[in-house]
Picture 1 (tube, rainbow, N blue to C red):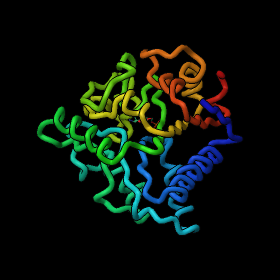
Picture 2: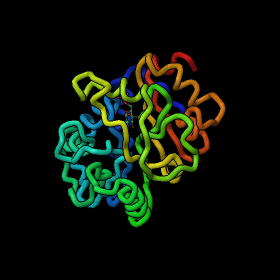
Picture 3: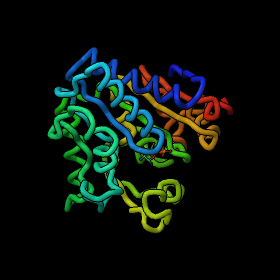
Length: 242
Ligand code: GLP
């Protein structure tokens, strides 16, 4: 793991966006693994800005998002497909047919998870996977005690995650879907490069566990210590317990 502590969260977002832009510039047909959550919003804003200013061509890029809530269709405002349209897909020249988010409304969610894993393999695997870190240590929706070798599958969300993500659901954890389709930790580890971004004092303790603690299924983010080419970007608040 290469751990970089930036001067502030704006600089974290700028550097993450530059790394994504650099990936696309260097390999125009890159397969990007994308993430959602508040941390990513400023990264996508900057990436859209860089793409506009420097004319970065996303026309041949393929994307795979980490996860989606079971029960939500891509048309629903709380879905991650909707999030991605709002923050990135709608603002750069990505071909919608090349953007992949698990279909939360699929009639058979288990089959959709298996098919999603096969689509990633069919695209030749992921070149660069962007990741956030949940306050309980999850990556994607791989909650604590998910197997480190897990594959894309349907999971039940932890209570802490329902609370953390209630913002989009009128602030009510009871309205957050209780299940999701997520790439597995094992799937994530197969990305050729990984970029984890962690900001804010609330994540200081879990960031320290993920980066410096033992590699353990109790903290799924710690699995990235085993990744051969992983960069972690932190702001000083998130790095304060390292
Ligand atoms: C959700 C996503 C995760 C993300 C996490 C962090 O739970 N499934 O992939 O890492 O949110 O979110 P935030 O950046 O809002 O703290």
